[in-house]
Image (cartoon, rainbow, N blue to C red):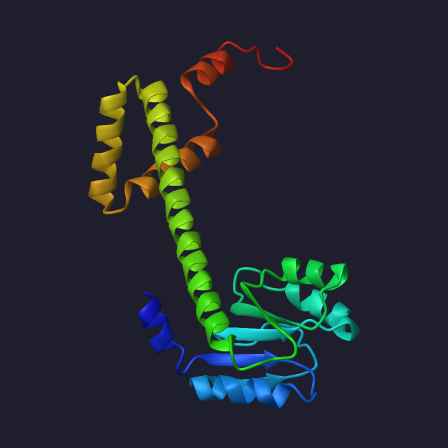
Length: 212
């Protein structure tokens, strides 16, 4: 995987959010030597650019704008590398809150930039894969819970055993050519709309109508 990441660095879309000082040209030049496609952005934009990697300069003069950017689209951020020149508590706090996966220190030097870029990209890809895995597991668990709920409804309302309820749910899903989770959800929704069970029906049947 590491070798593939190194190969993929060439052609990466990199946005450098950095003020126009004497260090920015050197940073951009180093990135282009690596093979990245580089765009320069300043001031700090209102939303994340469409890029694979963003190098974000943490500037005290642009703190408000940086904080605003960091609060947008938390689930669709590109790989973020912070560029810092000071190690004061305020700067470090902002770096931690940014979710940056690597840090480039000023003065910027060619040595270490490739390493930081490679590590940042690797960590970001691993984190994204973990998010997808968690999402798949959550979806699977949600489906299991829906099926369990639908089985309970069928058992309660039709007097079926757990196995018979499962097979009934399975047959209905197959006949309609839908996943069992979707069939289960339909049963749950129908029950919620009707809001009736044998116990509720019996209780209602025994009620005395108002005014009688």
